[in-house]
Image (cartoon, rainbow, N blue to C red; front, side, top):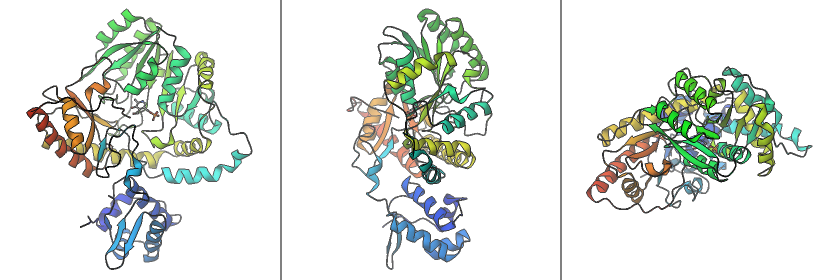
Length: 476
Ligand SMILES: Cc1ncc(COP(=O)(O)O)c(C=O)c1O
């Protein structure tokens, strides 16, 4: 039998949707909820009458919204049985084979990617961008530095955080990872040393090492940055670059304090090392906390990398570099050897989102907070001997296992339909077999189910530890 969702639950999920006109806003919101799994595929939706009452709308509005969902393939109505959530092409179309093994399994719970589905507001920003696009069609469409409105909107986010920034300092890229690759290409030569945190987001370190730079690992402990140990590494290596993720570090979730940022920046200044600061998670504080100042406000030779992926949506494929004037020419040269700019439509979408971010950001944070709390509770219940610190933001828990069986546990979980990344994926030079990263980027019900599966997988791994079957694991 299909699961059902109550009208009151739908009302709380759709929240305060756009009412101009209401049927379109409601349909939009329901489509997103179905698309991102918060209303699971095949769920029986409330009747038009029930939803009309729960939302305080007219019956015609709800009927038109349901008709719109049916027309676009997001619902199917069966006489006498009700309306059911559908996804055009089926749920599997949301997975990519590089990031997710077994893409054909519609019941797979994918916790390999620490990236959420698009929050409400993104679809509306696409609509607005499409309306603005004709003004750009008369030009050639190439913006190697970025569409000027977007450069301006990104610069304004730094100004709002107390860091004076001109639009010319912004280079828009197809994602933060691309930004890291451009920085490496523009500012390193073969044999240069680049300090990276350990554990760390692995794609970025691969990008940084791609042109022959040598990675030097600086430890990030379960308790946070050990600046004394990092200082010793920096003094010895005299690195060209230091790549760091001070805001809800991936994978540990740590937030670097203002005092630590000051000390770290001073230390890099003394060794004439350029800081490359990845702020992909900067806007994802989930406790309403005041965030520490941008690293670039404390260390003058800092290149900042930003991303739209985690704040808004990975499918935008947009990120950026904010660089001091003296590095801009080298970065632009490097960029032009890779591509000639990011797509205009997506840049217009991001411009809209950055100009009026409040509602979308609030929805994104509220959803992530609920999911984080659900994951924490589920893991404490199912796996009481796993330990973790609950980060105040970001996207994932870095779980410590009492025995070094992360790969075996991940392999057992994968056999049972849950994908998680074992610690070694984030290690610069091997190890971290005591850790598993578990993102809270899926709906709470999936996370609760995943915790049960992980507990089974853990027991199986403890009973008979086996080698992991996946040789190469790509994460996001
Ligand atoms: C720290 C960090 N930087 C960059 C990225 C990639 O960002 P983008 O999608 O903008 O390339 C991620 C994605 O997981 C990340 O965690």
